[in-house]
Length: 111
Image (cartoon, rainbow, N blue to C red; front, side, top):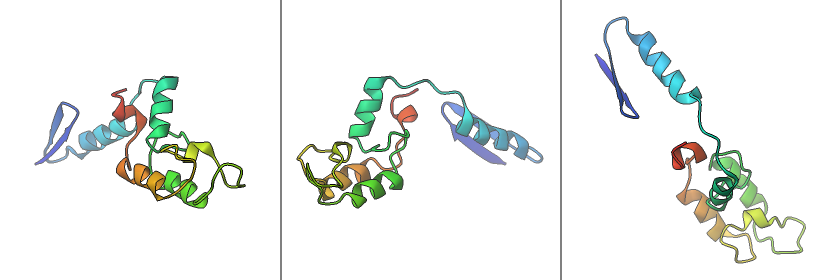
């Protein structure tokens, strides 16, 4: 018997019940979610979602790394990548992404 636990849900799967478990995992991945507000998007971007796709992950980290040591006026400067607003894109900004890695906006705000 396999026990699958999620948001206040527990599914016991016995012999031949793998379809139920598969359905549950698919539902968790693609279930309807609420729509974040513009304020929530702004807050989440400051937490490290620099490309605003709703996920803080290696894609955001690579974008910040590509602009490493950029300051206002330099060709690689993007104010969205300066997460701590110290006017230089550096490891401190990267640490913010690392601290929030694998978060997504929908789970973070309970949508």
